[in-house]
Image (cartoon, rainbow, N blue to C red):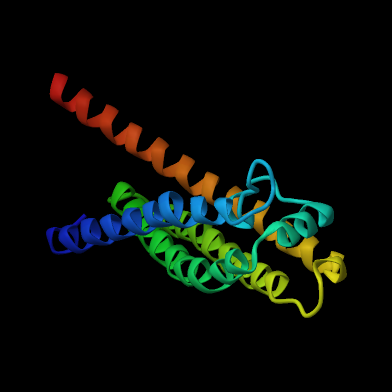
Length: 183
């Protein structure tokens, strides 16, 4: 990573981690506490393997009015910024780890990171529609829930793929640096 980009990258990474910590340590527990489920249900964004129509209905019906308002207002606002920040950090970090490598590798990693960002935003839009559907949770369209669930699964698939690639690249870089130091 060129020196000019190091400080902005680390600041952006710190902001991303801070926003994630806010969502994980403050917003998610607040939502879990606003659920009448025992134990409290996880917000849709944290259900890595998706959810069924019945689970979505149960979760929405279990939220207190304040919990539902918090989800739609505060959590969705935080989650509208986080995917963009994380996508930029993943792309910049990947390009740095691939310094001196073929452009096609950099573009491939960027496309995977962009896939994460795209599916996170599509998931957010579908969850927002689910949370604000007119009428009761019983009238929640099954197709909307299935779509939101698929976006959640795809978001985590792309996130896992890009994180795995970055971890492998970081380990390879460390091994190469260690081998150069021994030579």
